[in-house]
Amino acid sequence: MADLLVRVENLKKYFPINDGVFSRTARFVKAVDGLSFTISKGETYGLVGESGSGKSTTGRVILQLQKPTAGAVYFRGQDMAKLSKNQLRELRKEIQIIFQDPYSSLNPRMTAGEAIAEGLAAHGLAKGKKRREVVENIMDACGLAPYHHHRYPHEFSGGQRQRVVIARALALQPSFVVADEPVSALDVSIQAQIINLLKGLQEKFSLTYLFISHDLSVIKHISDRVGVMYLGTLAEEAPKSEFYAHPYHPYSKALLSAVPSMDPTTKKQRLLLQSHMPSPAHPPQGCLFHPRCSDKMPVCQEVAPFFREVAPGHRVACHLAE
Image (tube, rainbow, N blue to C red; front, top):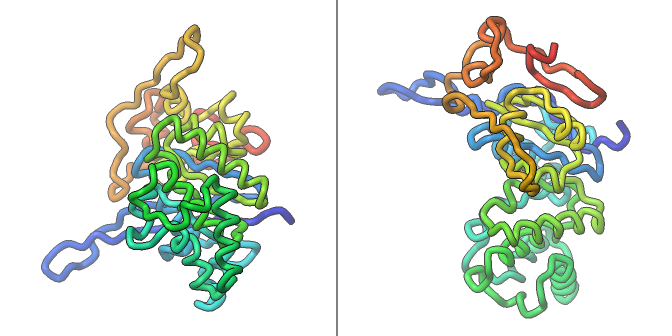
């Protein structure tokens, strides 16, 4: 517990849907619905799932970019929702985010150097020549040359822009970084370079990552533990090696069956999911996954499974595992 950095307890984030002339709240979109997990210092926790499962919302709520509807997020044992504005502002130097689209997350009127120095200026850190030195050092660590300092976002390739975004996130020397689909907008050849860069920076600066992705092959390369998210909650959680060797949840098995194999002699049976993910505004009764599960039982339609441990560090919410 001494190495615990982030603790998420029963986190919920509901978005109201207003109907009628008076715009009364008729129902809610349950983007995150009772999520609980922990991240230790120096660890990379991979959060994976389909689009619409609530992954990005989880990252934003953890960083307090959006306020939770219920539950709590603890950073170094402090409940972040109870911090004052000044305390939260001070804490933001330790928690940063890398966004999915590097082009839209950069101001087109700011050079790379200005973008990276923006956080330093906002917090009144490293002024003048010292600030320039800090910026150039972090640019070098992220694989950017000194002459990139005066270039604008449109003058970079996609991979270079993402390096600028990463450098901006690390300029304040954070200890925890949420990487929200940081390679999904890049070419496959560039993805490996950015993933390797993130791993190298983690070792160099003792970083802790929450790595959000829909790509299980990327998650396998960078993560220490894997959490599979479905309709706002966790379906399965396990150490990386255990998860890829022995998945329990039918949803996890279906996602893994869709990952291409690098060995042409390996034959994989593709597990096709029935229908589409239900709307988070109308989640199904019982097990959230049962409308798409080929192995469902009568109990699955009535009773929500308990998120239980089936092996050391391996938890799953499925009646088949009970």
